[in-house]
Amino acid sequence: MMALKETPSQTVGPYFAYGLCPQQYDFDLKSLFTPDLAAPETPGEHITLIGQVYDGDGKPVHDAMLEFSQVDADGHYPASREEIARNGFRGFARVGTGTDAQHRFVVRTVKPGRAHADEAPHLNMIVTMRGILTHTFTRIYFDDEAAANARDAVLASVPESRRATLIAKRSEQAGSVIYRFDIRMQGADETVFFDL
Image (cartoon, rainbow, N blue to C red; front, side, top):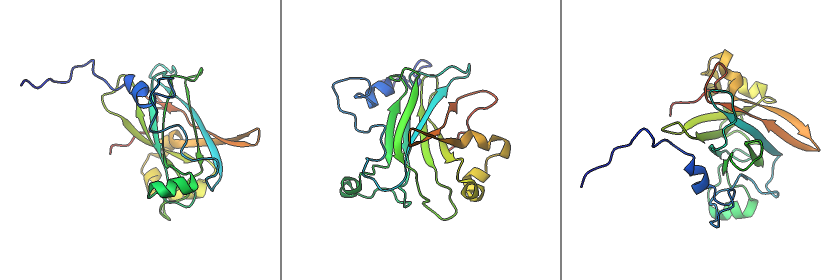
């Protein structure tokens, strides 16, 4: 049997967003993961993370798929289905940018604690989209955690002039805490991605 090789047209996406977020795109299949890392009853400060993915021309990407993982407010990843059912914290979310009129991602969660004492609160993020052969990894830190950010070894490994690309900006709207975080895939202010 002849092994088929990858061709240049076989890049990541946009079909991943449709296949892995079917409910968001109004397909009859159930999504395994949603844009919610936490349920309303999950302990902690509830936040909404909103942003857009921009391509090299500065245009919003309408077919990106994003995955998020994080610890809960106490710094723990969920250890079992029973724990998830008990406190509503899933620790993982998946969302596409194709169903929002502004091509945004909107993720609801609780502000993460620290998994380790020397680590700043953050979310891990994977970006999958058209035109790239493999997904990219980055982190999202919070602008109101300056002291913790200054001690974080991963953030410190990034040149100081580029660290702002990893910082979400806090605001409050109608009593809700919103963090804005945009991803720029290319250009002078390209988001820092990590080689894992």
